Image 1 (tube, helix red, strand yellow):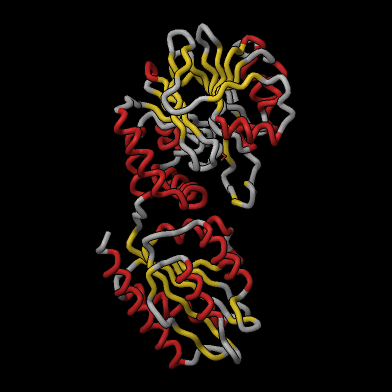
Image 2: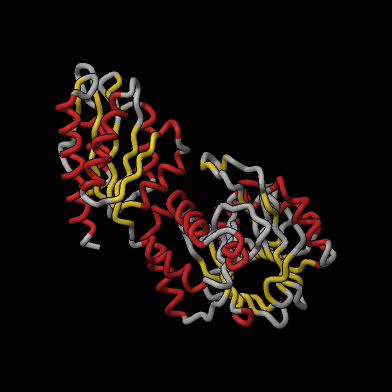
Length: 404
Ligand code: FEO
């Protein structure tokens, strides 16, 4: 795509990845973008690079505006390979450029590349770089979401270049939120933000809240937020900060996700009366079969709703493998403020429901115990019990939801 001037003399020079569907295991049905920004000031400055597969794209974009050898400064907000792995190509074209990066970022770069001769300058929060009419201020955001992470604020442009934060995995021809919402919808964009947050940023809620408070305390005047993935926030820059605060505090919809897998449909049959019981209590319910849903989609639906029922058959006295994998992944995301229950079928010893509750305990989540299990296939009586458990669980979800 052609470059786009997002602020006077500040240009998007990134790449749209229409094809990526597996982003280190995270399914990206709508692709993504790798955004980076070129400032054509007295000192030509590039903020961030792109994934190595797209280095030619960003170099051509830069060349359409300026001779890359004129780049005097390169800012690296984040070294993860989807942003940092294009740097070697840029340095080859602008070998005298100074690379502004956190000290942890430099150490990470040195592990990835032969950085001999690269001109690093370590920066920390509050350090500035004057490029001419613009002054860039750096803001470290360690563990949001890597130790090296930082953001770059450009006061005169009221622009925050926020690296991964506030991003979305969307490949689009639009570069701005208002353009995207005009063609697609606000709801689609909201879902993309939720999915990105749930799968990448869920573990960092407390850090996000304190970092946003720090930014608000600094009184930075921001009217545009430009992340390194997806569309740029120019209409809803204020709203996306508020939305992140909501996500960071674990805000959820009043509803229940039933997330399950099944061997011979017995556990699957249990989802029907459970769902009906939840619905009959006036609570929204969504049913998600794990082997029919990408892991990232099932994580998003978990995070969207206040309550979650996990369903698993017992296999060899423990959880079914796909459910065990899901719960392990979920535990790594350190979820908070959700209420859980479990159900499943078994043939003889049982064990899956017990193991699911053990996982919930490790996650320190609220629980409705002891869940429900059926022998082989649910009988009519079992289905009634499932229905009753669905109603009981929904009532507990409503009660718990009032706390937030
Ligand atoms: Fe988009 Fe943490 O990389």
